[in-house]
Length: 318
Ligand SMILES: Nc1ncnc2c1ncn2[C@@H]1O[C@H](COP(=O)(O)OP(=O)(O)OP(=O)(O)O)[C@@H](O)[C@H]1O
Ligand SMILES: [Mg+2]
Picture 1 (cartoon, helix red, strand yellow):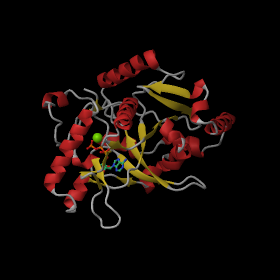
Picture 2 (cartoon, rainbow, N blue to C red; picture 1 turned 135 degrees about the vertical axis):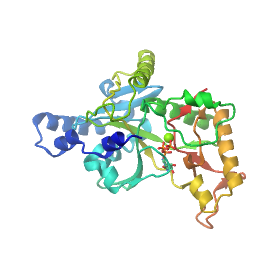
Picture 3 (cartoon, rainbow, N blue to C red; picture 1 turned 180 degrees about the vertical axis):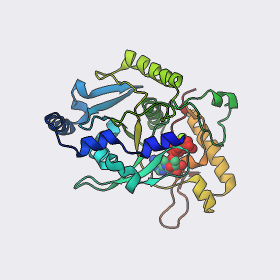
Picture 4 (cartoon, helix red, strand yellow; picture 1 turned 180 degrees about the horizontal axis):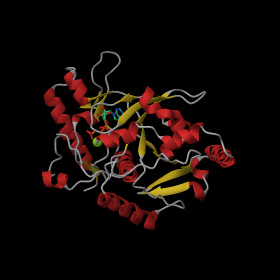
């Protein structure tokens, strides 16, 4: 990640703060009232002007009073009060109270969120790196049959592609009742701030390819609201937090032998392949395991470690 991108992520979101703190104009009061009404409606009954669809997944499309856009998945709709930016984004709350995740080069936070009267929960706040000119790649165990050349040509999924592919993977798991568990995709937020695309590290040609794929998909299968990516805006993915610890940490702690760690990465790749997917840069840091409360041993079913995967920037269908 470039220093510019880092600043863009944690720097002062002027527009947003001005709108959140400044005098509330009539337009904003109306926007807040409209939003409050929409939030009362069950997902299935949302009107067409609040429905978008991309890569096979429907979204509640919300134009927020701060000028931002929030796209909430059906999984996220039950948690919509947790997902509103004032709960985790405004005044850089994710940065102030969240815990930055260190096992990756991207910008990922675990953020406690507790809307009034509701049970506290943790959200994963992940800044999308799609269309960045340099794909930073950390050593991993390549899925079988994947050449280093194929990896060099790989691109990071745009946020809507990432969610679409993840939901397609989750559906195969429900059908096959198989091993691959994943975190649930909840929402995509695009704050109103306009940022120089060079600070976001975006390449125009990579961005154009993402736009073309999204446009093609919406031409044939889109919803009433057209989703448009903006090269000068950030896109933040909100996921549920998966309880447990990643396999690399557990190995360092001595809870998972190195041989079993290697075997685990290979078997997660095999499980993904059996479902018709691959994660090009799969590695132990993305594999979450859980310990049993009673004796601290790792949770297993039928002898196999129970695991969940958490990074889908490079989830692909061959
Ligand atoms: N939903 C989640 N539940 C639990 N832990 C998570 C979750 N999402 C991320 N993490 C933790 O945060 C770390 C970093 O997340 P992630 O792998 O998504 O970041 P990244 O920047 O894409 O990593 P990389 O640079 O390796 O691609 C993970 O290794 C994992 O330990
Ligand atoms: Mg990643």
